Image (tube, rainbow, N blue to C red; front, side):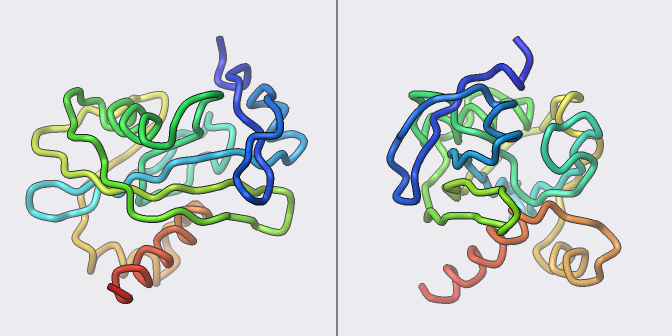
Length: 173
């Protein structure tokens, strides 16, 4: 089964399930669905940053400071966060990612999804999926801030929105 054939829950503005559809149809028709964003750090506190492969259905070849993806039909946010983190990082036995907050991402151009943000510590080496990750590295938050601010690397817009909310959320605590 291709990723476009994966079945997703379609949700409303209150994150209530109102139907199901193929992932490709969800994207083509701009249907609201669910995603997880996992802020992955190494033991030194550096953040896993990667460039998505050119074959990705959404935001191909852009950089991202989160691992994650869509929540499958009937899957919980928590289960999706662990599954996606282990898949994209290429590790098993990760601790369950810690839920931080949730927000509705909407770019105003037909892309809208409920976004649950998590954090996880990665103790060992990573081996990212070559189908998902074209390049990766662990950057300090200062290095990441510089990359985001200088505009040389083009980051996924939903990741930038989640990153801004993460920084505000941390500042409010």
